[in-house]
Image (cartoon, rainbow, N blue to C red; front, side, top):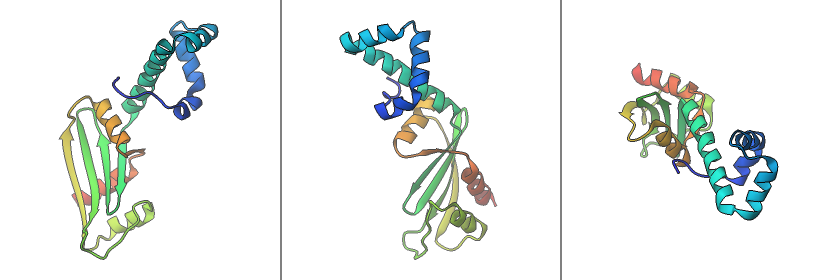
Length: 159
């Protein structure tokens, strides 16, 4: 599999989409019940195929990611061929602290930078398939975002 199987928790809100997926693939309700009861391997293959479709759609639409950790906020702009990174890193030796979950604090920091704070930018080509790389980043803790923080940090890094 390119991605992973959706968990039951992830599948539940997608019940209508899953039913549509089954119908499009020629599996009616009675057939699905029979598969669940008698052919676990085949039913798992169908769930795997649905999971692939769901994740592929989400990853194709994803344009921005964020990763927050202690002392660091990294944002990403996921273009077709390149991924751009804009981040803020706090010097571990400095006494300065910021809550990277508080967007107002981040915006204030960008407006009036202080010592011990590094704003940076970088770019790279995808190592593999764009969608797969974005998926891997999400699985490692990145969150899909609206891009506001990326744009704010990127403009501060350029200034």
